[in-house]
Amino acid sequence: MAVVIRLARIGTKHAPKYRITVSDSRRYATSKYLEILGYYIPSTSGDKKVVLDLVKTQDWIKKGAQPSDRVKHVIKLAQAAK
Image (tube, helix red, strand yellow):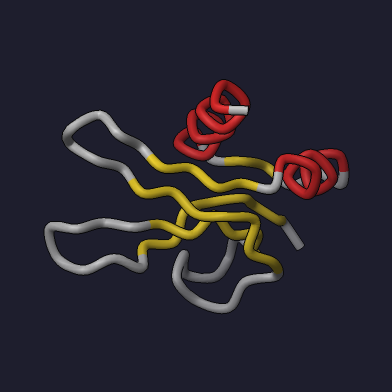
């Protein structure tokens, strides 16, 4: 099973919010997931809110989970905010 860390959209129209999830790569992004690592709320005004469990994220990456390009960016935002 190929495991990926990716964003799953949960927001409404014109107000996106994303969960950062660990899931099987063969499933849809919004379908069943293995674990929720945090969430990400982008904003046009520049105030981006990131809540991410960095320890769990690093554990999943060590186990072989591949983060998407956007998740790599969100991880960097979370590390900078810490």
